[in-house]
Image (cartoon, rainbow, N blue to C red; front, side):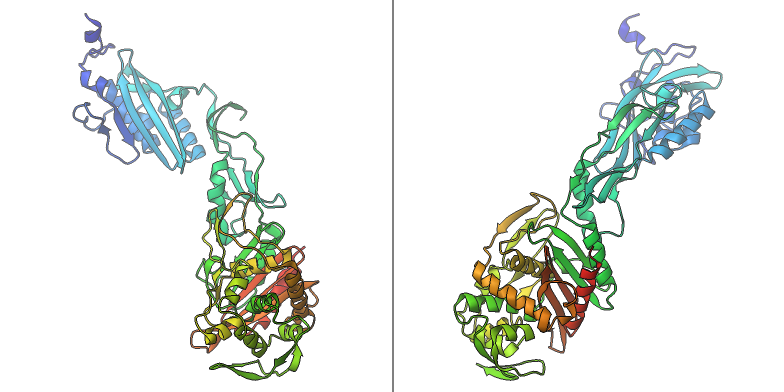
Amino acid sequence: MSPAAKRGVLIGGAVAVVAIVVAAVVLLTGGGTPAAEPGAGPPAGPADPAAVDPAAAARAYLLAFAAKDADGASKATDAPQAAASALQDAWTTLRPSGLTAKLGQVTEGNTAEYTISWTFGPGRVWTYSGSLGLVHGADGWRVHWAPSVLHPKLAAGQRLVVDAADAPVLVDRDGQPLVVSGGGGVRPADEKAFPLLRSVLTGHAQAFDAFAVERVDGSGKNVETLFGNREQRKPVASGLSVATQQAAQAAVDGYQGKAVLVALQPSTGDVLAVAQNSKLDNTSSAFSGQYAPGSTFKIVTATAALEAGLVTPDSAVPCPLTDRIGTRTLSNEGFDLGTTTVHKAFARSCNTTFGRLASRLPADGLAKAASQYGLNADFAIDGLSTEMGRVDPAKSADEQVEDGIGQGTVQVSPFGAAVMAATAASGHAVTPRLWPDGTKVDTGYTAPPAAVLASVRGMMREVVTGGTATGLARSGPVFGKTGTAQFGDGAEAHGWFVGYRGDVAFSVFLEGANDSGPAVGLGAKFLGGLK
């Protein structure tokens, strides 16, 4: 008999022509219908382990295996109890999200080739090939059970396990775990931490996943890593701060209205914390929400006026209760300082003073000064969509007056406001980032001259020591500016505080607060929560 003829005959008491079965490669998936590859001929009917066709036994086992059917798979073997125990242990321990099994050639030596794929999640598909021994007994053909049926390298007394020890793969600036990898996959170390950044952090950490399937002996000692890599790597460090985030989240969660707080490190641009409370259902509010900045924008107006040489901090300026400027009438919140200085008008947030100063600037004066604080910058931060703000040259004299007090057409996000504060604190352009080399600067900027910034800082300090933010006077050397910004029909207003203490710059935005006082209080609570 020729070799080709021999391959068409099964040996072992039952003779059958299986040329089609030998050539067929059948894909078996959990819950699916076996599908033959091209050239395999018609698919076989329902598998019967007791049939005289040995391929039927292999097919029955693999189909039940892919469906995680321990009863069906074990009954297709010659050792049902041992098979059921081993299979159930493997499925329970490895916890695959999907399984597929492919039946290959059935040879004259009574073996069936197979390929199995375990899916553990995105990018985690473990595929290997092996062979099943086939034996014929009184009940027909069965798969001969051995540990190698589960995996070709598995020996007696060994098991398949996932290394379940969680290892940090992404940490904060202080080494606190942000994302861990282990038996449960890549996941946040604390589900409550950085809720607005959860998907960004886990997505970034996928590249450093340390997931692995291991072959272990009876004592649990690793004999071989079969899939993945549990090599201990140094965790990737982020500029985020768990401690700062906790303080920020506690501050916004304690507020009854809608609150956002963004904190940056001026010296590096590291994003320290981004928090908003559950009252805000727009998850992009902190990063790209566009709002009128109100009097926090007087930082920009003061910078433009100083840089243009219109005034110095000590220049005498009028601060009447109301002032008609062009066709616009501006008013202060119930106070009249008469003739005062620029720095006092800034500290008390005199609208009439700064509306008048804005009217004396060129049409692009405010836009240029705003750009010096990053409000017209554009950053591509890995994993984030951000919008700093938008400040265009005024289209009319009236618009210029309104823009000068943070109303009109100027728009700023809480994230952009934090960049503005960080620029004032550091004296240089700040590139916000979550991790080193994680930000592309699409539109950069240059900070205001050092002498101008020195004057602005002095005025920002006076806001806290004797102006509209004295609620922060006991929070250390804080510099900042308050803001109240009308929106809609003008019946309601947002509350703001923008400032810094040491190497922490932050913005507080309270939607519809109608006053800046609560923003000051929230800022004090935040700073009080920092260690």
